[in-house]
Image (cartoon, rainbow, N blue to C red; front, side):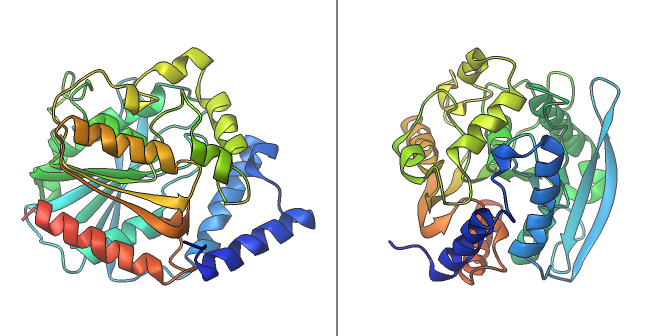
Length: 321
């Protein structure tokens, strides 16, 4: 399918910015510059944040004595007691991204679904390399279970989700291979919500060659992320970096997976869905035709995004009745 016309117009503006020197590919920026630019992108992609959301901030203690922020989103239609919850991790290649850059996603998920959303931060590379982000995600999941009753949440109805690198963290918490619960209360999600996940850093797929330049996320930027996140290329074979290599063959929790047609990550997302099916998993998978990476933050670019949130809400409500 051709590119969505609104997305195509947006990409043309991005390319014009590169040609005129007003915009620079992320992999040519310093980490500090890349983080600033990524934060600014939120205002361009979704400038009108939905209202009717209650937001609270918490500090989550970590195993090394540090702490991270977590934001709690609750829509006006959510249950006040025993509310189902989405534990959501933002994308950004483990190097950029924040609670602010993905506030639009969390607000829209909470508003569309009636679920509460708990969005933890996690420490970024290169200051905090692998496996810090994984451990922070594990600690946030344990904290959610411990605090569920106090927050008015139902720990038996928890969906773990994320986009891009955040979706990778979600897959690890949903698998049977993780260590969540060895140091804290056991974390057992009832489903996983994955948008364009990063699932295999060990291989180069056809979609990388086809859409690795000119479609928002670029293959060189992915390499730049890995250079900052990993200490060696050998770590690309670690299943916590490449969930497709996960050794456990047990049936995973049900998954909702959406990837973009024009995304270098498209193929590894599809192969991950195939792997879950092969393990006997229940998978709702679709390639979103005409869209690019990061479409979940593009409500201000194309009207199609609202339909995606509505579809997500239907799946969530069926999963957590």
